[in-house]
Length: 59
Image 1 (cartoon, rainbow, N blue to C red):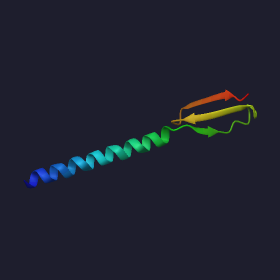
Image 2: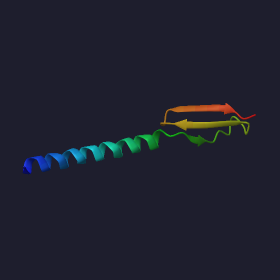
Image 3: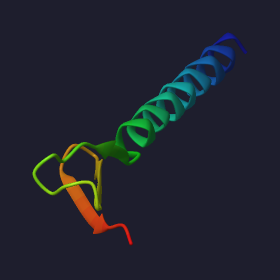
């Protein structure tokens, strides 16, 4: 009986850590604006996950 209680607690701790890690990854991967002085004011750029930068022309 004691072993099953610890197993349940350990399982819940692992699940909580996985959910927290997933939340951190999603927050880091969310796109955010990047200022691009070289392109000018008619362009809008955003960066996601520290790697992918996309720019589009604002009409």
